[in-house]
Image 1 (cartoon, rainbow, N blue to C red):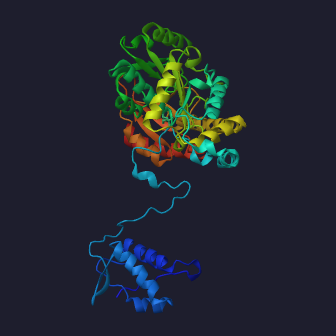
Image 2: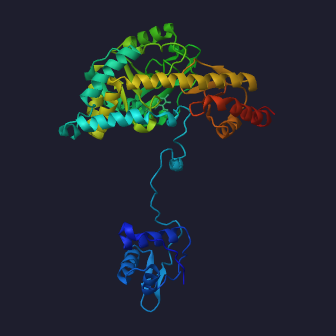
Image 3: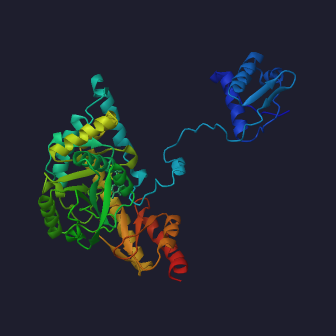
Length: 461
Ligand SMILES: Cc1ncc(COP(=O)(O)O)c(C=O)c1O
């Protein structure tokens, strides 16, 4: 007979439910194995000082769930086919809990921000404000292109911070750069009546490519050098090109003034659309970021951005600013896809931008991430001098080139607290992307020493 060691809190009520939960947990943890016989209801009730009916109710519930089996004369046993861990309900998560590690290809990207720096208090205050003031009707299905208040704030913000040239009507709220650009590709495919040719930087953010392909694009890689994408290398038949002009991902270079002009000319000449992935533009540390390309050619460029780097990727909140016909098509596509983004978060972001809280947070993030990046650059120069750091002082990742196979460094870097990925490119040297956002400046030097020790053994030797 199994001894159950049940703990029941009489004051909390729901006694049968408590017993059932305790027995479930005992089965799932393996304390009660299949076939184990449970105490008779009368005995357990007496032990617990409860009425027998409460225990009967709990057992009946578990029999109905298939966890227990009850046969006349044989008592109640744990069902033969129940395995430890079966049917486990997820425990409530705690902030910072990483149980989503079961999605191995997501999370811990080198471009993820330090989620410990998420402005919880400011966000909470904005949520409170929004819930206290929002009229009931605002909670209905909204414009699939986004709530007007946020589109207005974003148009003004992008004009002020990114020198964009956009009216609120041509801003579409999306779940991020990824969805925004996917919907643009889909709209182009629909317009052309065929798959499109999409030129993309090489190297690039490899995670974006499957999204573009799924949306209907055949991707053509175009080399990147120290001035950004090589415009002469663009295929003549491209319907669009996707670029990261403010801070090329992954190499970290800025598109030079000459290349910016050449790219805009190319788009005007060929009729192609430029998709400007502005993923981390607000995080420039040494000076103001270069204005976006969209401001130079609003009729040819779609600007896409999000709060993924400034606040948190998990918010899934972003925007595109597009030529009117593209904005219309994307809004329509979003309506047909899923009727738009959650409205409360949109009002919250609008309130945060309007009240200056978003700008304040960005100023803090720039100071903090600059410290972390500077510490990493110094430490690499000291301990891994054979790696060459490229790119500007910006963003959440740093790009370093080396020689040979750098894959051995990736695990070592991760173990040292830096998220890392190797970069493969048809052109150029092997590279390593090091995400420094999550490592406080005072821990960087030690982390790089660990990394360098490992590199000395595994990579060079
Ligand atoms: C270069 C680049 N573009 C776009 C994205 C996707 O961003 P979002 O979260 O806004 O969809 C990422 C995400 O890491 C990225 O690194």
